[in-house]
Length: 275
Image (cartoon, rainbow, N blue to C red; front, side, top):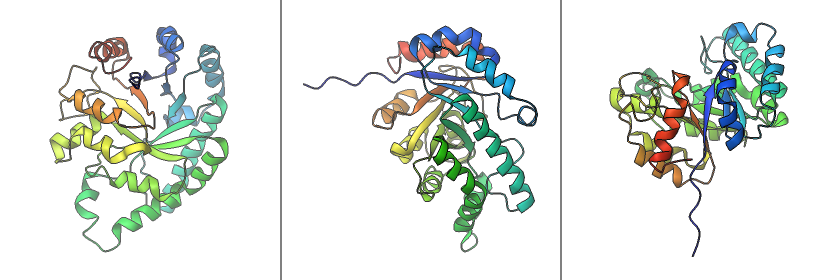
């Protein structure tokens, strides 16, 4: 008789100033960590290497998987303006610099698909292919570098209504270093407010291309980033869908109030969903 697979392991996203609070929890469980210092323009444009050195020192003894949230403020990876594209490429490259410095092997980037694009990509012939071409023009060199340095770019849903479009975009690179991320609160917002499928459908659509999940609870009206149990996401269905995967995605608690990470983790542990 086969043994049941272990419950998935929870990790968390946080800025580096929260590491002293959660270091023991992260190290004792060797949990996955996503650092959230390095999407800020003022950090990337400054001397961030002393901060990276402090983080490495703080994480001595941590062998869980390490990633960062890549830059996203003020741009879209399918920009049509070549001058803006150059800025986006610079920021993504800076994020990869950080990954190399920290030894991180995953970086979150934001999906280009919007509510507008969902309703309009089929309004003009070839629009879907052109969007994909713009993303390749923007990220092609970054993907090649990511392959060289062993970093996976995971594309996170933001306004995505069609859970398959982002998956097809990731597949179009033909690279093991481009995969998919799901933010549960974003998916729930799209479901309740814009008519998208429910959250577990996003998991099923991604399948084993799913390598990263932002876990947050919400009400479907806004991007709440509440602790798990404070909103109305149907977690049993989400975790059943996750349980069908073999890709072992990082399950990252991403909360607006980092002081509630322990509360959110305890909720899922007590419910028998994770450890």
